[in-house]
Length: 211
Image (cartoon, rainbow, N blue to C red):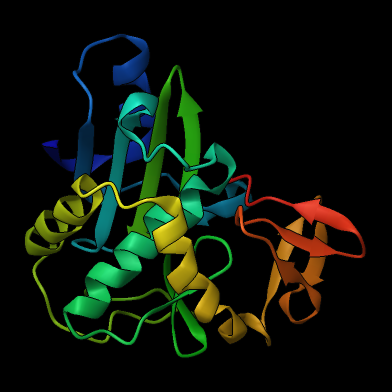
């Protein structure tokens, strides 16, 4: 994974998308910034920037994804691998469906996933040094670049979706007291059924992460 480091950018995801659309980079490719001035979170919410937290976007061609991965669940897949990477380093982090990273009951980061041409583009925000009000930061001390190295090594293993999901499924009960959003509705995760493709079913309706 080639990595471009920037001091400041409006959004690593917007920047990387433009590089892909202009065919200026060879994928897989990642963009990392010290500061992000216009970061985008889930449902187009703004992700506040504090210098030296993790602001990352990376792109992987469809051809290099696990053969059994549904694109609709890519955010679960790559978020869970990040969660496992941090767990290996001693964190008590967990993944709230489908793409939010938590320490206990407070959010420390998350991921959004988009499709650009024939590539998955993932944007990650993670509070590794400090957190905005209402959030929390990582419960271990580590260097950003060391985390990136470990994370991309784990991604390169191309673990099958089935393998990743089987572990996530065992931890899904941690979602019981939390909520998610779909079509401007607030949905209790305590009343849903997790499906093998990463979707959830509530009142007979199947919902994918779509992020």
